[in-house]
Image (cartoon, rainbow, N blue to C red; front, side, top):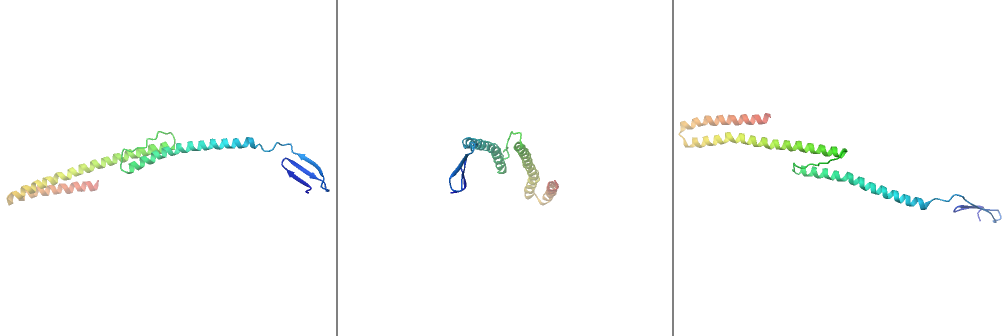
Length: 167
């Protein structure tokens, strides 16, 4: 009933009285769905596989670095990332390892310092304890002589504490 109409790959033209005048068939073969759909599916599969591979290459070293940081934070001063890569993640891993090594050295030297300070403070205290034990057993005049030794040891303790505070 229309004067003209479009159909799949053809145009129909009618006269005013409704008789058909002509059918024009287009010469183009149409959209190549048989070629495009498999090609698009192949591209999607390749892109998906590449995305999985790249994401695993990124996530694996980040997991290693995060695990090392968590162990180090929990007190394991031997934890290292040991990422042997030539990219930014390798740089971050090496920086973490250097930081962990320096921090471990600082913690170790701090422990050694505390052990040394403890030893240095205990020595005068032990001498004072011995002198007080001797003074409790001695007569009064000899006990007064021991008080001078205790005062010397107290001065030594005060000097040690001042040295620690200043350092």
